[in-house]
Image: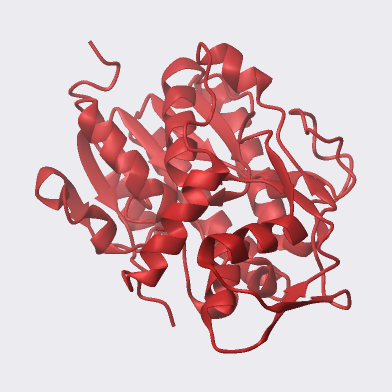
Length: 327
């Protein structure tokens, strides 16, 4: 029998990019789900096939009184509610990223503690690592240096939420899992202007009528991307098998440069454009790739199930069909 069978689970941010995949997975494993989402980033279309099987609440979790109400009677609380945007937006909104993410995270865990919730998932981020982190990056103490410069406000918020999880585990004996996702992508990601992450942003740029495409940075920066449904699976396994307040990476070790990513997308889309790499703009860490050996060990062999080629093809086809709310 599944660990999740008949568990009362509160999933914050469950209408969002990764949260909606996790909602589907938990439901298929027998959980009794309450999903809370402000719909600032989340989209009910992500849940249209299962909305009648869950208790959905549109609420703002920055209000601790709301957090107190929705966490009552829960067996597990999983916090996937976050303001996480692409480089163009995050680089100029550090204060907003810090404050909004801290309010939701601190309120939820404190409310869960006060209401006697036994198990909690803190979703952190690879943005907590410094720009010169070892690659592939293992889990290590991140308070020796600043978080990556391009996402510093977001990175500090996630570092503090990790600390809260560690302290609450020690002081209140709560079972707390901490996951650090790396570079998620997929059709349910935000496709909206400056808030877009790199892959949807590139697909949109390659689809317009211009003869050239401007890419931030040198194009030589490398990333390892992981599909949203694989991130959800990793977080689910982590919560189930390793709630010990010890951070675990959730990612892929398949690397690709942004330059090669652009060429791969052009091939998949059947377009050809002049590429201009704007080195006056920030490009983030030069390399960003996860060491996932720890997750592999605690989950009895986790590895991403969706290849980058398959995931990109899915996004390109979905965008071409117009099944999006892009601005």
